[in-house]
Length: 630
Image (tube, rainbow, N blue to C red):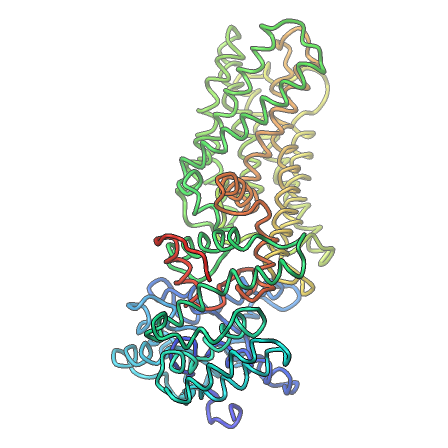
């Protein structure tokens, strides 16, 4: 029937819980199952992420395609204009689910944007609640050329027949369904009868009663359930405890406590609701943590974490290297703490920059500005470590080398603040010739910059800063840094067609790239920085100084690199919230279990609650006292 439409444009309406999303999914599966080679491909999009005040519908579709299907971003394989071509040539059927999930003031603008930016012959499916679509149409008109479909209410007899078939024949609950059926035959307008006209309520009743030991006859109690809303609240209240209780009976050792699971899901629903979205995106978890939500707070959290890591490694090195006296121990401890101040302005200022384009020119300028702020913050460490040395060498030591090291790190990973989207994919061996030419160009560029920096030292009269000997330090440092940056560029390649965009795979991919970037930037930062610390005027034991410089510099570079990725911020936020009892320690395992039980659904790398009703109900539970479900 859909293919027989003149323009293949359809609007699916209905009240909340009437099965609009399920209808859209069944339509997608049917179109894929019967698809010919040249037929367009149906693709599901959740409209909850569309803001018509910031972008048009076409730009939003392009952005979502690039984010949800990162493999098509491979320009060498598919071409630079592949996404635009897919839309222009009508090779896709966008299935736009949930116009009603947008804020009320955005719905009419979103509908107008669909009409204005997509040709009227573009295949399209849109789902929305009837009342919300009607209000939007009154303001901006209908979706051009679209047929409109609305389901009839579920008949009570059909609902009860399904629920009895879903219940084991020998179970005592069969008598409960019979008692409820008799009650509804005599009172066809009873609250339970009205509630069971919704497919969502029928599905909830099946989860609560058909598959468990609860007695469905209680729904006939007119005192407990005087309105359909009472029945709905009861089923929503009972859903989570019932599902987790059954899971615990099946797998006692692997399941979560029902009360604990209810508390975690209630907290998650409240946080998602507060953000004004329906997407539970793991890389946005830091926004729910007060210590990480604001840039300057986040910079001090990273300061404390890096400080703790430096102090731990310094303590170990003091013991391993047998530093002779406690004043020397204290000196290294103080120097380690002062060096971490480099990260505070860098992380704080980068969090204030919202536009994260990765053009080389813009990245270089921003990296230079942030590096300068880090160099100024390094002054206390320089005053502590280099006091008493000649002025020119002192100025160069405390400013130029740490700044140069920091600039190289930022050039490789970008701004050290949480990105809008996590890293996708994994390191792959493809387009080898192009990658080789790009790596050689990057290597030559970094070596040239290194040569200019070291030549500047000599011209300005800072030749004593360069370590003695015949070693061409500018070439060595530039080569090592260039190779490290080339490795970073390699691991940040687009995803391949083999990558599966799920929440777990997204976490794993970003974790891998975060760790590789951290290791590479530890080396990038450490090479110029380490050369600074091994000078003819360093302390009497240069070997110990070299080891301390390598470890401290590596940790500073790794910290800035990790702060530019999603997984470290997610991990810090998860641990902080778990320590407070707000979330489980194994969050992804918990979310995967909730998805398996049918409480959550998965849309690419994000989770969503099974239905907006469930999210709203759980979020409201944060504000009311908890009670045990009978």
